[in-house]
Amino acid sequence: MYGKAFAPEYQGALTTLSVNSSLTDVLAAGTEQLRAAERAGKPGEAARSGLAVAEAHRRLGRVEDADRAWKASYRAARQASDVAAMAWALWSGGTLARQRGAFRLARRLLQLAADLGERGGDIVVRGYSLAGLAETGRIQGDYEAVGRLHEQLLAEARRRGEARHTVWALEGIAQMHRNTGDYDTAYALFEESAEIAARADDRRGHAWALRGLADVVSVRDGDTERALELLSEAEATCRAMRLSSALAYNHKMRGNVLYRAGRYAEARALYEQALAEFREMSEPRGEALSRLGLAKSLARLGRDHAETAAELAELAGTLERIGLQHARKMVARAYDELGIPDAGAVEARPAEVTR
Image 1 (cartoon, rainbow, N blue to C red):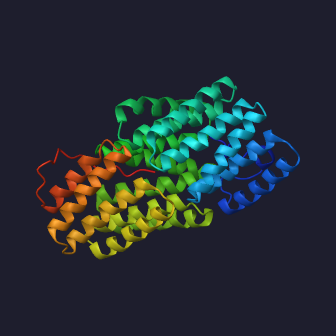
Image 2 (cartoon, rainbow, N blue to C red; image 1 turned 90 degrees about the vertical axis):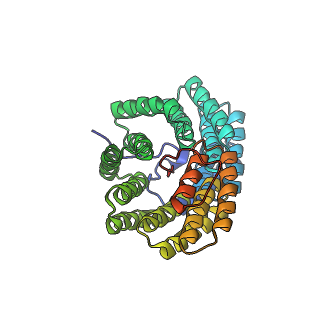
Image 3 (cartoon, rainbow, N blue to C red; image 1 turned 90 degrees about the horizontal axis):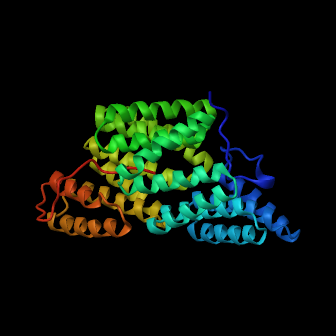
């Protein structure tokens, strides 16, 4: 059995906050407690409160504020000689680095966080940091390297009855199955994660699961309306909790669903919306993937092939610089799909669509 989902990143005086608390509420409460701790000369509490501030900023897409906040949290934790709090701050910084497309930095910070978590006796931050390393590798397309780690973390989460981490692991494994074409397994895993998240009242995890289900329903079944219904349900949660990044990925997925249905003008509008959202929060991976969808939609709407080819070539370079191993294959699929010659094309595989 799984217990009610909780948010271990809300610490110290903020442990009463729910995993479903609005991020604006988390930010307000965290900032208030942080200032109080600083005035009282309590660096340990400042580190814990600052972690919530950093995470609220990150999830709201305010990357510069998040960057300053996690570093301040780390400095306060070090001043307090609180090894576990140092680990949590590094986890936040590593997660932010991954969100910004800085995968090498993300791996370095998350490994440090895992090591400090073990040294400080905090198995939760160690688990979260290892999960972050697994997700970083998965996003880059290195499934062989991180598949076993996902399975290991899933087994540990199930054993401890941690709903939120179980949902995360199931969704990651499901995404890898989806991207390698095993849609039935992907659907079953996304469905299980949605059920666990719903029972545990993990609204964020439930929204991501619905997005995964919508993707599979669209690509496997061609059921556009059902996919759009699932995305609308997930979007309501994203808006209620102010999950800026998740909302942008939801809009990009809606563009994918519409594109597959041949509704290219509608898809273009969604890709443009997602692109603007990703640019506002300085999230290069989402921006590049939205640009790819937009380029394909514009090509379907009559854009000159030479212009499309030039943009696809630029996108290939951008995605490779970000560090996505599968990027060239995604672009190769686009060349082939649109009937545009590409001398450097390589064998394609299903495109990565992940958090």
